[in-house]
Image 1 (cartoon, one colour):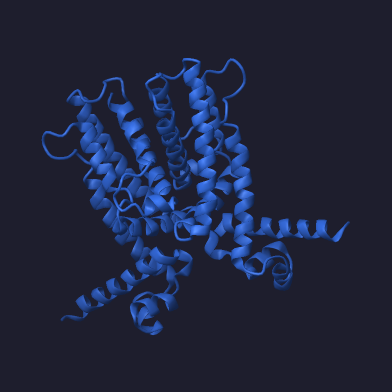
Image 2 (cartoon, rainbow over the protein chains, first blue to last red):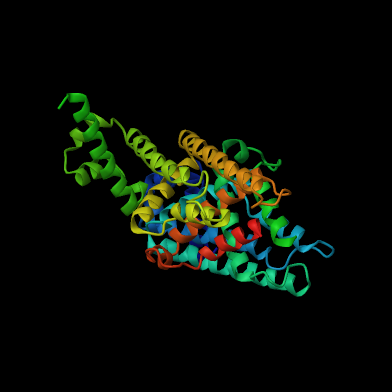
Length: 204
Length: 204
């Protein structure tokens, strides 16, 4: 195996360990030492791939952003044929909420990055870029729905895109911070009444 | 001055230092050492009042919750006479968003607690309690609006209360993570289009 591939693989192995520590204990628990222990390697090995905690966090942020981007891509233009716009939008938004253990873990990592971005402009920039993309996708989907008559002409797609993004983020936190909802593993959670109310209002 | 009052005052002085450190650098930067430096006292002095970092954070959380509670109380039953329900609700929600430097600082602390609550059930419980209160207040306001005919009878106050709370939290993050919006100091920010769209849909 060429050395550069091996290097990339080891970097990913260490980044995965970092994500597990963040998911379990939050970003405060992340250090070269705790990540080395989680990855089953020496502190020196971690430092060969990431010189500082910040370098590790940046790498992890990029991998979480990729995963969020794949999900947000699903919002672009609704679901399978025959679904109404409201149903397709609902399905895509549900995909982005922490309603199973895997997405719950990711949302915990996401939460840690959000908090860091609140005090660190370099992290805020990465998230702002992703928010811009999500707004663009939502806006495009809403304009399409308006063109097919599934959304009133009087509605402003740009404002509604911002509203939907705020609802997605707000519900992520509402579910994440409610232990019963976070443990529901896909069962209906009361927080989703908010989503149904919003979609009912937007597409009525 | 009796010793117990002095004790309480010094505790508050140290907690205020903790909040300033959190606001500036996030919760990761909080330690007995950094808080002592910020408060201008010795590590031993901090430890006399808070034995651990967790004790400090809990005390700070309670003080931030008090401040949020005072603001949420304002949502209970709209504003001065003569205001429509939509205007009163809008004014109350604006009060809870980080649109000036003081509230921006508070939102940064809040963000740090949210992230911690995502991995710590004891912190999640405090926030769940506050969310429950906020939902109760919003529900009460919406039922009142329905009784005066300012809200359609077909609307479900409980679902709308959850929707408004998700929007408040989502917009807090959207403003906090957008450096331009966070620095706007009360000027109109594009994120508020989401709030206007939601209020327009709810009260149309």
